[in-house]
Structure formats: C-alpha cells, structure tokens
Image (tube, rainbow, N blue to C red):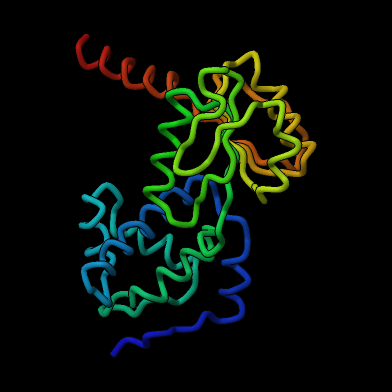
Length: 226
C-alpha cells in the first residue's frame, strides 16, 4: 500500500530546495505535464516504466528514477510513485504553485502566438499586460487585454503585478526594452529577439533563438542527405 502523502526527510527537503541543473528542468517539466494527464484519467500510481511510456520513451526509465530520486523518497521499489504528491512536489520545485503574471512586449505574430500557447497550456501563467509600437496593433484587444503603446510600460507593468517579461520585438529594440523592464524590478525575461541581452545579475534571461533551432535541423538534414 503506497502512502498517499509520503513526506520528504529534512535532508531531502534541503536538497530539493537547491537550484536544479538547467538540463534536468525540462525533463522535470515533462514529467509534471505527463503526470497531470495521468491524473485527469483517474490514475493514482505510476512506475518509472509507465511514466517513460507516457513520454513516448523519449526519456529512459533509469533517467526518470534518477531525476525523481533527487526530489526525495517519493516512490517505493516495485510499487512506483503516488501521482498526487509527486505532481505537488514537481510543481513546488518548478515554481508552478504560484500564479505568474506576464508582460509581453511586441505583439506581432510571435507575441500573439506565445500568448495563446502559454495560457492554453499552463493555468499558472497569465498574460497581464501587452505592448506594441504599431498604431495598427495598439488599442486591439486580446482576451480582454488592451494592447498598449510601449511608452506606457513604466505606468502599466507594476500596476498589473507582472513578474515575467516576454520580449518579442526586432533585435535593434530588444536591449532598450530589456533595460526598461529591469529598471522596473522584473527579474525574469524570456527573449525571442535574435540578439543577446546584456543585463547584470540577478536578471534571469532565457534566449529562444527559433532560427538557430531551425538551423540545427537543417544541418542534420544535410548530413542525412549527404
């Protein structure tokens, strides 16, 4: 019989509070998403092999056990994991137990697509403010949010309680936008602009280079076709 609420030992709790390696975080998020799907289907327990199957065997069961072991004694040999407490622990580790409010700067095709995607996939992420500099876009509404002029960033971001910024502007405008966001106290930026942002710590920046990712695919395709 699996304990429905296994508790972490003090040392395990301490270890779980430490920063995780960036390589393991996407895997943990994949586990969390798959386990939520299992919850929705009424499952209460799962083995590492079962979780690997839900992930299409893209991650080996041995790697899954290693990753989850770092979170504490959440499973029992031969019996698997109780899903509910595992989902809760993964949510705590990934910061998904909080409600995160996002400001999007640049609401062209990419900014619009991101807003639609993230709100549909994760209930904890909420777009709270949207900005653009195009007269054709300013004043439009997206799910009840009015797209504002970028000149209003300082007046709006704090009032909206935003704690994450998404930059989806042309490369030449990205640095100035990032500096304005940092001056407002936001410490997390997801950057889609094709240029690195130069900001001092403790600003957390994730650069998403879509063209770079495509070039990896085309490089590998060229090797296959050679």
